[in-house]
Length: 564
Image 1: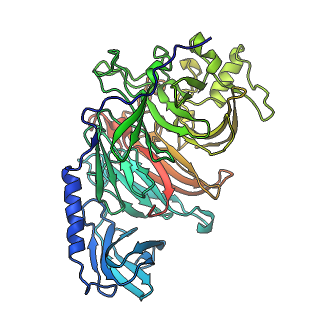
Image 2 (image 1 turned 45 degrees about the vertical axis):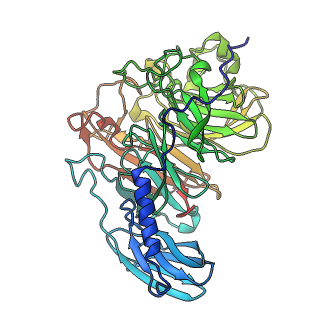
């Protein structure tokens, strides 16, 4: 048996794609930076520096310390509020001989912050008053997609048990923000900066694209002070995950814009682009409509389109396993994680329920096994099929990420298993209020075409997310997770983003929706060490917006040092 050979992953011809050096924001921010440098003379020293809070109007809890230095060295910086109520943040920055704009972030809102700078010249303290946070939906009900409401649900007993860093989260078309373990906001970007698929790249900057910025067709590179360094113009949306390879290339979930497919098709969100960040140009494109079966029924799916587009796959994550040269991709609307050969686009495996696949794909389906390699299920037995769907397989999954190993033909991945339906049969599906999302750690063996579930953590009743979600395994073994689509109606019943499409429509909800997203750090055994709720603070109805069911979502969450 052999599938038809997909096209080689050649780049598409660029039309408007590339870096825009004349972008007005990039030009303006460069001018601000140059002007601040020009204001530093030999008299502006560590004892009397220039302090510039939020120089670009994009990161209100960040500033520059401008000074002249006679030496090149690494300085130590501490940020804390004047009343010592929040955890102190400590980091280092490099300075050079001459003029310096030292980036500082991690300030607290609506308070006097004390910044301590320690160098070979001594120790100096500077105080800075910051503004209050922007209003939330609850504080300004006539607004929409406003600043998230942050609540500390469970404080940590012992901060020493936590991994280092701050919790960076990106709330869709609202804000990027970073929280300390007491749920204090220590950094955020205003809504002019895209918030969606936030990624810190190797140079310490961030990349992101979002609906609010030309429908994902502008990708911003920006830093912790809110300076936009590069504007990437895109011919086709980078609508979901961004991932940087070790060679610097960006891997992103992409597509053909509607009406541009060479075959005349109308499918969307079913490709992967590799992009050279030095030029902004595509170096390869993987057309998954030529790899998988576009006619296979979706489960879950999106509501019907009004423009004739077909969202049959809905790629939400992709990365390259460099050991085996395999592009690993998550297709939410097929509830499938699959791999293709990087050089040829040829299919290598499919991880997901064995139901409803055409016969040509059967040999690519992974077999669930236990630790001895013994199959767990008999897929000729309907009871086993249902059990595998309920307890093993991934449904509507997000955030498929590599757990590194160097073994040939062995891939280890972690996923957010959102758990939509847990069956292709409505009668056997799990209602949202009885459901949970899960964090799964899997081992795929391509020698035997098997998959083993090594460990799993459940969200509990407050964490069922019919969409979104992200997690990260920290170096100390802790797990940071945001169940980024947990939504409830006004009665507290777990809600689904699209009843009838992302879950069965049980017609029992009260017509309102409010996002209450659990952001947690757990130890390796799954014990919750700190629990924070990220919400909108206000239940919305269809009268408020046609997006009310997506009241607030978080697509990306990480624990990162303040500066990369």
